[in-house]
Length: 339
Image (tube, rainbow, N blue to C red):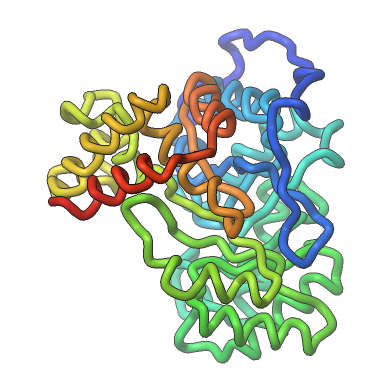
């Protein structure tokens, strides 16, 4: 990372009231509870980012009752650097709180060159978790996910890999990500036949991406699988920050950004209309977007990202009001479909 601790970061003890600030939801068929908001390290923890600010952001998340930190082997950039940088912060600030945290990582997308550097094979997944544990310095992950279905690997092999990881004690729970309802169903049956289960499916779900409502949410409930929604702000579109253009210092303005706002004029117009509704509710657009997801009992947790403690504080306020009137829900539908 660009900036290290020579700035003189102050000492820290977590807020004693942190568990009074965040609701916790049971994960479907398991006794485990997720915070309503989980924290993802996809962005802002790579070697091109600021370790000082990243460290303060993680502290703020825990201070506000966010107990779940979510990684993946290829988060960065470069690949692997988010896990390494998280490990540095963890050893400085969170080592004595390991028992209070849910820490997860994932493997599935490309990670290293050659035929074994991506997918769902036992070779890839077993190698990946070893590398991820080494980078983070952890003895185990609370949850280890298969990051995406692999059309070239039978789901039976992927399930065997996850079961082996659980038996070896390298993870406590198994998860999946980006699985549609049919593959989710098959994977759950395979895991159950091996004496375990899929705990959670991470899916992309937001006001601008309603596809999980077709089949995934209902099937997850039948299968006893928790649903964690990622990209709840559509990578920043559902915030007040881009309503009038792209600030120079924003993630959207960086060369390596996945977010290309100039290609999404219709979604930006939807966001402007939604911002008006949010204002009437006394919420920022980001808070309303998160609250809209949390109003659904089928969503166990919403995975947020943040580049500063201030963003954490703003997002956490979403849990203060997750109730919507029929009129508000109708206005939201009109804003989404009337373009």
